[in-house]
Length: 256
Picture 1 (cartoon, helix red, strand yellow):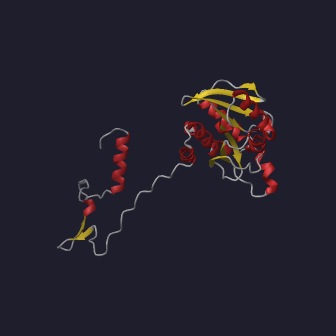
Picture 2: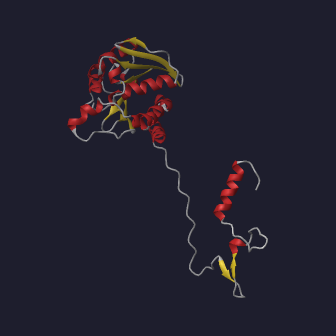
Picture 3: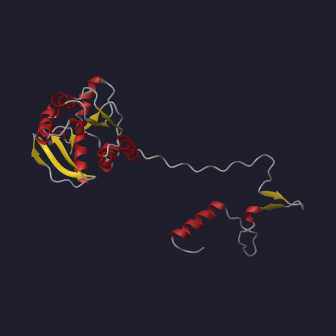
C-alpha cells in the first residue's frame, strides 16, 4: 500500500493559493483514477483506490500546513505503512512554474509542511516538488505562496502540470521516477515542431530557370505546362498556387 499526501491549507479562502498545489494534484489524481469518495478521517480527508493493481491511499491533511505531520502520522500508525512508501505532493519555490522534480529524503528547504512531516514521521519519503517559481525577493515569499494562481496560469501550465502528474502517476507507482519526470515535462512543455528545411540556393554557374534558347528567345520553363488561353500567350501558374489549389481540392474532396 502506498500513501500519497497532497499538502495545502483547508478552507475556500486558500483553495486557489500557490501553496495549495499539492491539494490540487491530489484532487486530480483521485478524479483521474476513479478513486472512492473523500472521507473525513485522521484530521484530514482520505480517498482510496488502485493504480496498476496497487492499493493507494490519498490524504489531504486539514491541520493547516505547519501541522501536517500530525495527520500523516495517524495514517502511518493506523495502516502500519513504512515511511519509504509515502509520496508527498507539494509546492516548490526553487523550481520555475510548471517544472517538477522527484527526490527521496533530504531537507525540508523551509517548507513548513515538510518540516512537520519530518518531525513526526521521518525523512525517507519521496517528494514530488511542483514548481511555483520564486518572487525574487525574500520579503515577497509569504504573499507569493499564499497568493492565488492567475487565470492565465490556471488555464495554462498549471492545468497541464496537474493533468500530467495524474496521467503519468502509474510510473511513480512502479518506481520509475525518471520516466515520470520526463513524461510530465513533455506534457507541460511539448517540443516545438521542426521547421521545414529551406531549399538550397542554386550553385554559382547553374543555368537560370529562364534559359536562353539558341535563337535568342527566352524560354520560361515555369510556363511550359500552363493552360493555353485563346488569343493570349501561355499564362504561367506558380508552384505555390498549384500546391494550394491541390490542397483545397483534397480538403473538399473534389478533383481539379
